Length: 332
Image (cartoon, rainbow, N blue to C red; front, side, top):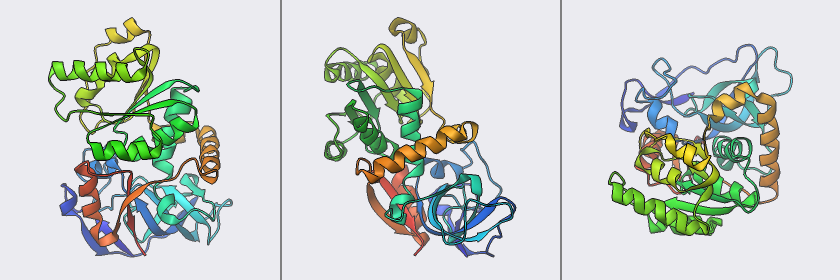
């Protein structure tokens, strides 16, 4: 097998393509011949030892893959050789073969191509869990999405619209804004990349309130963090819900008196832990998502595809925040 390995702490440029022995599945595991791997923000952190999981080196990044099972370990009864699947592996996905716990593997419809499947489970799983389970979003509520042109943001646009919400997509450029409008966003808002200034934050908050149509939004989906968080929280309506999804702009400090004044909630969205702690709910959510995919209401938007040998370039593109939708690494 071949794998794009992290052999030292560093950025995407430190990854090297190496040949390795094929792994053998253990008890309750399967081996998957990888066709495609999704590229996600945690992949840029794990190679720098900045993620909560720090695997021993050498290891391949890549936590989300799609492929075909080619070996089954003892104790696995619900999967077989030849099944088309997606899997969450944490790391190891930027490789031609990977071993996965069978509990983390899900069969995919025959109609779903591998590149779309590799971009499906993490982004749509995160956003569906966030909007359905954590925010309990309702029809006609207003949803603000920060970082709306990224992978989870795109999923949140589609799922918000499918839930009957009015969607405001906040992004950093007109190109991204048009992309979000094409996806169905009702309104777009271009924010400044320099938000540390209090005046800029106040202006951002006022713009959100103006677009909400009634002085505030019901749900904020924050996949950005940093200095964008507080003005978005200030733009919540009464009993609004603030979803904490990610921090590419840094971990913010929030004045908690704002939650008191607005009767609002700050809600953490840790989808990976949810799949372990609430596996039955996760299975039900995946059923929801496959149904929406079959109805054409959701579809991964892939803006760039890279071969395995150029996986570092794919990570760099994501790290530079130049991605519209999703980026995929393919092994074929």
